[in-house]
Image 1 (cartoon, rainbow, N blue to C red):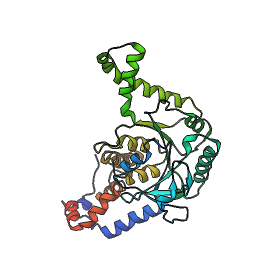
Image 2: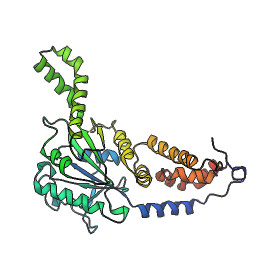
Image 3: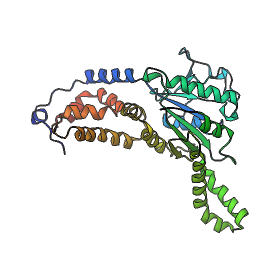
Image 4: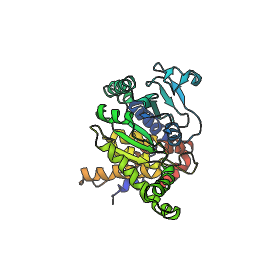
Length: 323
């Protein structure tokens, strides 16, 4: 438990919401936005996942390297021709804190596509400023395909060294695996429909695990993995992807940037905000006194969107702080 300075508690220093709002804005400007490279075939459900992460059903705005908005009709994502470029930035208005890059056309697994992705990752990893780097890579693999691991995946995880940029294997469209398992069990083991139905969940689970094990054998295996299903439904979310992403980031700064940007999981924000305070007490065990103001500022680093809400009604928040 923390000991709170009695002077701070009984006579709290006035909390200037305007100043604190400017402080968070300055931090956000310095750190930039969280940048994600999304890799995968055209049918991997990438756009659906990004919309879930950003809590929207609308398509993103797309900007070129110069920051000029691109007309979506000029882009041919399937062929990779026209205005599409891996360096283009996709930004959803519902959460502009994320910048996404899409490696459209990579499903072919050809030399040209592989080199473009490799060059982009290398170029971004060498950027001096944090704001311009790619912070994480989501490699989406659709599990409704008869061959989920194709030459594209083999080439990527065998030949592309991402350095300090972690890669997460996102296994998408897992909802159809049980139906496939029923059919497979009936055909290969001559089971009745009811017996196949009973054994399908375990069979599908092993299939997923085996697919993941295949990726682990390659030189540049993913650092994390998640299984997603039924992303088209309104009731589903990407909390597991959020948790996995936050766990593979190697610096507190990147963790804080990602967690404060995502709006999917309140649980993960609470977890890391609490961890920050506990870590401070571990590092400075003799410093037993933390002010309410300091604790509040530290926690709110992970809740910038809540801060905006609080700024709207500072009178109400002042009451909360003084109670």
